[in-house]
Structure formats: structure tokens, C-alpha cells
Image (cartoon, rainbow, N blue to C red; front, side, top):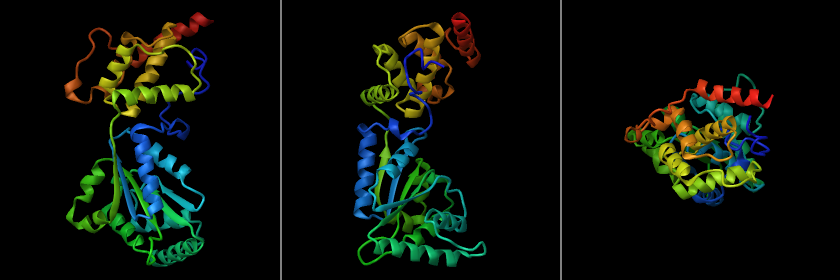
Length: 301
């Protein structure tokens, strides 16, 4: 849409968690370093929490791509499953062959055997679970029991949980206290400060091939930080819309006025009541943005 206009080789603010856009600084670097230290130390449970849109899935994928060759990775993206389904999923991730009639106990025995085999080969196994706040309590307990597998020196299975703040609330339950006490490392992904947000945007533009001049007025960036609340996903959504508007208007810089229009078309920018101040006279619907694109397209014909 606007790639050629800005001389970009790919979309810089896509919501797809592309690890090539991972910003190796600020809270993202701190989180990845914490995870790598925890994995190297052989910790049983590691927990990463953060609000919706703060980059947990991207961090998870970056971790999976960053571990050394002697670490075997397994991944469960949707943990809202029963304990048996969890066992099945882990067995499949470990490439274990089993019959369709295998019960949960026999699967656990096969998993144990496979984990011991990997340990004897000096290999670690980590299980990354995304959206962990959705995991039922019984499945969490089954997961805890799976991590009871250990030698005298280390765990046979490490688990990294990525979840929203509701995960912390869930683990405060008395009946999950044994699980909670197994969590050795915790990290909370914070919202981006103004400086980190600018570094985040600059990094994504650079990776996408941008070599032009100053793309943002500083007042536009200030407005973006205020309404995005430093949440990376909201930053992506708003800047993407601002680029569309720039393209439609034939302008090369995102001004404060253009940023206001992009924000006005983003409902989540007004979630927090303290910022519920609608820019007068510039409330654009998606149809208005589409209209600007049609006009630009006809001009080019």
C-alpha cells in the first residue's frame, strides 16, 4: 500500500510477531537476558507476564530461536486444554511415537523416558507456553507434576510461562501455592518509555529499509506515546494508520495533525478514561481513511 511511497521493502508495523523486528535493547533485552540466564541455570519454572500487546509472543519466539544447539525446545501456543491433551501435545512436540489408545499414564512414562534420554545426551528440554493465564487449574497441576522429573543435579524439563497479569492473579490461589513456589524466575514486561518507544519505531523502520528523512514530528511522537500508553501493539496499529494517511495525502512526514487522525480511528487508544479526550473535528472512520486512499489511487492513474 505505502511501501513504494516510503521506499520500504516490507511492512514495518505488522502485528505478526516477526523476530527480525525484535529490539535488542530496553525491556526486551532485559527480558531475553533474564530468560537465557534462567534456562542456562536449569530452573524449573520461569514466568513472564505483561499486559496485552506488550510483546510476550515475540519474546517467546525470540527465545525459541536464541537457545543454543544443546537445548531442545517445545512450544504450546494455546494452553486452554485438559491435562491429557497437554500430555499429548508435549509427547508430540518431543517426537514421541505412541498409539492412539495410549492413556495419560503411559504417555507420561514415554515422556519421562525421552527426557532421560535427552539428559544422558547432555541436552536440556524447555517447554514454552504462551497465553498461560488461560490454562485450567487442573492442567497447571498436571504440568507441575511433569516438572517433578529430575536428577540429583537438575530438572529434566524446564517450563517458561508467558501470560497476561491474570496469570499472577491465578497463581495467588491457595490451591496453586505448590505451583507458585516452583516459579524461580519472574519478569514483567513494562510499557515503553518515550525514549524506548522512539528506539522501537526507529528500529522497525530501519529493518524495513527506510532511509528517508525525519518521518515524525516530535509533537506527533509525544501524542503517540500518550495515547498508545507505550504498548507496542498499539504503537504498531496507530503508526500503520498514520503511514496510510500520509500516503493518501501525498505527504512525507507524520505531523501532529496526521497522528491525531490515526489515533481518532483507533478505539483502543481511548481505553483509559484519563485519556478520553476526543480530538474535536478530526474523528475519522475507517471509511474516511479508505476514501483518502481511493483519491490517492485515482491521482496516480
